[in-house]
Length: 466
Picture 1 (cartoon, one colour):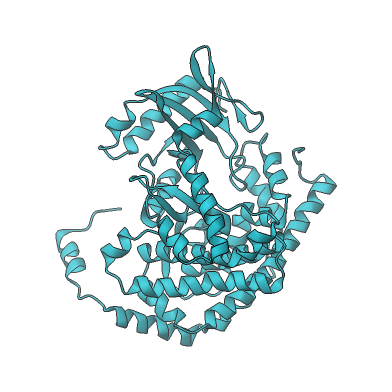
Picture 2: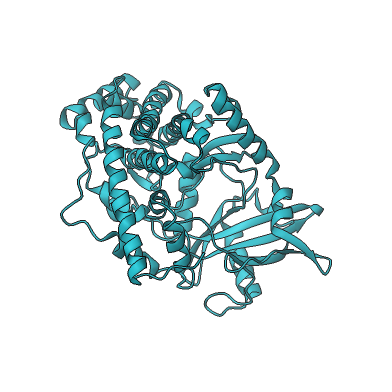
């Protein structure tokens, strides 16, 4: 991409500012072309692909010995299936109507991809915590995947139809109200905005606050030292990563046969080049102690992932970085966004753009055709557990409200919040529409899950044993 000339830059920065009200009015006009109720319907396209075939095609780009683990995790429930099938839903969303307003879309915006994490100042922040699929795209895609996941998760946890609808509505209502608030704020104020633990607690009921305090307490305990104690052991006076095959395995060679020490040295060299210069002196003070292959997530299972243990200034100064393969975003076939020459850079740039407090060690690179990004592994992280527990499902709409808030903040950082707010308005039209959409797509998810169950029973796919 060529750099803009001086005159082009002057034109760009001297163009008169369009006011917030003018942008809201423009968003409101879009309702005439695309009324809110147009978002309510979900009907499978006549050319919709077999969801199992989509997963099988994805498996061709992944480590074959890990693919059965991915299927096993997706077969746990329809909610687990939805978490692992972002590519299936991306194709479905591409057939739904959109306003044309774009943001830095997350691409995999379900309720399990939010949580608590530590800022550089060691404060706990609530926000989006997975960015593997991020790419510029329609804001509606993220919001629709979020509400669909709310309905699917609520069903899995034992919620009835009314509670599932309440959960979806809570997410949309919160998104709508928060995006309006952000549209009135200055650009820098939005950029610096975060949802901290006090914000989380302030709006919760007494019952939900009790559960949130437990999660916050656990997150504070999950610092680097806790991760070190859980994931490592002392062997021959040296800290080593604990193996737990097939999920955590120490390998002597990479998949292409390269000795691990050689491959790791080259990967770290490439990674360091991607870091801001002020980060390089910090990371260079650490030394590698151990490295192991690790299986992570649901949808990510089968992609290359390694954890690297570093030691710094003494036994209490540890650092664990995660190297994770970055493949093409599931949104890529449906987005006209510019392409990065490294998919890892795409992930990092997207995360830095829309996350309130990105990891200081985020970096990227390519090695022997594999695109990757690097981040810290679990530093003061915490999140909701999605189990069929009466207390959790009863409080679920309150959690969905927080998710809607965090999504609104991400979209306000990267898109035109005033235009989106103008389109949404202050009424409940979009709440009604997406509540209906969430139920319809939850039904579709259950049908797709049943198709995967049949594929497993017939032997079409190989599933790892429990």
